[in-house]
Image 1 (spheres, each protein chain N blue to C red):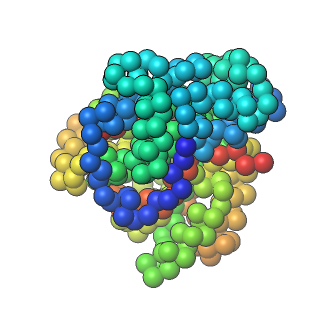
Image 2: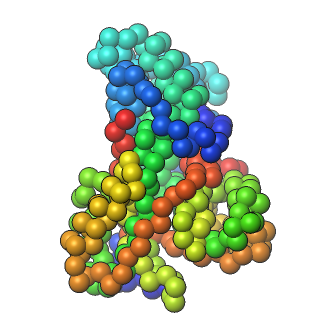
Amino acid sequence: MTATTNTAAANTAAETLDAVDRALVNRLQDGIAVERRPFAGIAADLALSEEEVAGRVAALVGRGVLSRFGPMVHAERLGGGLTLAALAVPADDFDRVAAIVNGFPEVAHNYARQHALNMWFVVATERPDRVDTVLRAIAQATGLPVRNFPKLAEYTLDLRFRA
Amino acid sequence: MTAGPTAQLPAEPPADRLDDTDRRLIRATQAGLPAGPAPFDTVADDLGLPVAEVLERFRRLLAAGVIRRIAAVPNHYRLGYTANGMSVWEVPADRVDEAGRQFAALPWVSHCYRRPADPPDWPYTLFAMVHARSRGEVEALVAEMAAFLGDRCRSHAVLYSTRILKKTGFRLTA
């Protein structure tokens, strides 16, 4: 279950969610149990069938309310490399550079931000030594210097949004 | 760019603890679990594995922390959290871990990281993501954080996101 589109409209329009969708979004951020019927408990709590829960989850993904529903992989524990990097992109070249950066499969997230450094992206690689290679390739492909801000310490892991 | 003596990254277990079947499972599900009330059965069918083995492997990957959880990842914009400020703080090296732990405890801070400064134009070493429903709300929260840090912070800035350009999460590629 994955959203394939992230249009500008989808990113700015707040959704109207009914109470059941809200409860699902909130509960399902905490994670499901690894069981053959992982929705059984939440379905019982919400007086729904498991099929209805699964259908609503798929619909929330399809509408882009959820970016995805599945395993959240810890890149570093997988033995991979991870960093946050930034570019100062000329405004009139922004979309072209965004397409180049997004074209790298190692770019996991990319955000436009209001600052001289106006493009911020996460590079995640299967092997730690690939991070520098990818950053160099992005610098070469975009013609822009890549600023690298690797994580030195992490003070929190969890991220929950109340719907 | 300097990593201070107190920078603490947890020791990460080596990737070679994962075997090929673990990697197949991650690759098959990283973009999302199959739809339906029995997603792990579907994964097992797709990969030709017994469902008991699929469950056992996912449980092990969770216990090892390779998978943080199997969960919904919301598009926070679609939930109304349209003001997303990456607050960045210039904090002296000997105070940054303390400040980071304190920021992490704030309910409106989702992620909080120490990262290297990159002088001369980037003096900031502490990154705290602040999410709210309006920029005014973010400004008020950041002002509260600045007051809390007091003279431990030399300067700060807030970088608002204006667009999600890509959000796929980490993917195994090979």
